[in-house]
Length: 167
Image 1 (cartoon, rainbow, N blue to C red):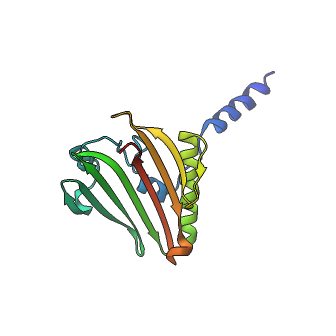
Image 2: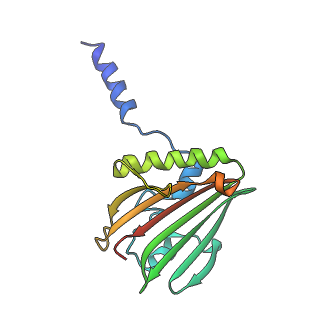
Image 3: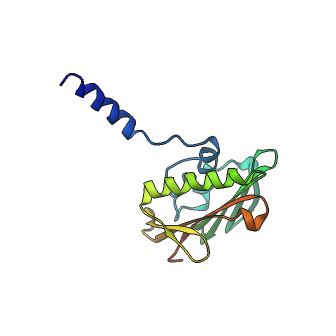
């Protein structure tokens, strides 16, 4: 009995710890709160501005914010936010890599993350993998879609789209 308790304790500790995410995953997701990067669909443009780094803001229009982040030489990602009446209805992240395997590994990390967070995914005809959820702010249905399309791009590329499907 004394041997079973320490073994059970170790299994509990190691079984409950989630797989460590890569620095690249953590940089792009920024926060696990909200739908992505700490942002929830239905947020105002002011709320989104507070969560992003204004040093990387390329376009700032009443219904559109565009940020461009460099990861390292030859590797970068963009984040765009689309609003209507100052309410966020879409987030798009496009990540670009010199090494195709970086995009493939990152894709798998996001698939695992969203499967764990939202349940099983669905593979769409256009190659996107999707999940359904809802916005806590406006209760609208939300689709999260991800696609690694490096063959078509000719370099590592990954696209993540979070959109209000009731928009």
